[in-house]
Amino acid sequence: MQHLDGNVLAGPASELFPSEPTTTRGQCLSCSDIATLAQAMVYGAPMGYVVRCRGCDGVLVVITEHDGQTTVNMHSLRLLSEL
Ligand SMILES: [Zn+2]
Image 1: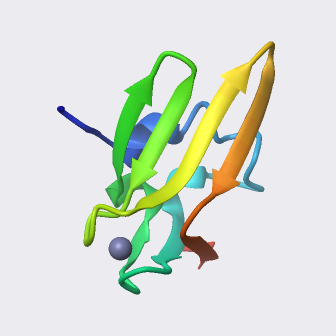
Image 2 (image 1 turned 45 degrees about the vertical axis):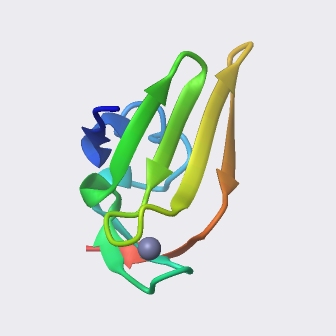
């Protein structure tokens, strides 16, 4: 399945982060890779996004949108800071 880059999260995640979500750095709790969300692999789904680590393909975040509400499940991501 073809993935998108993390820049696709700029819109749906903009309400969840204090500033630009794609430049927010995070660390994968599985492999310790540190990258911006823009560098993550994103798979779109009809109701949201699955964000996977570029290093180990582990699921970092699942963002779902339903009835106008956005839910974020931080599976394996530690947010660090903005660039
Ligand atoms: Zn990883």
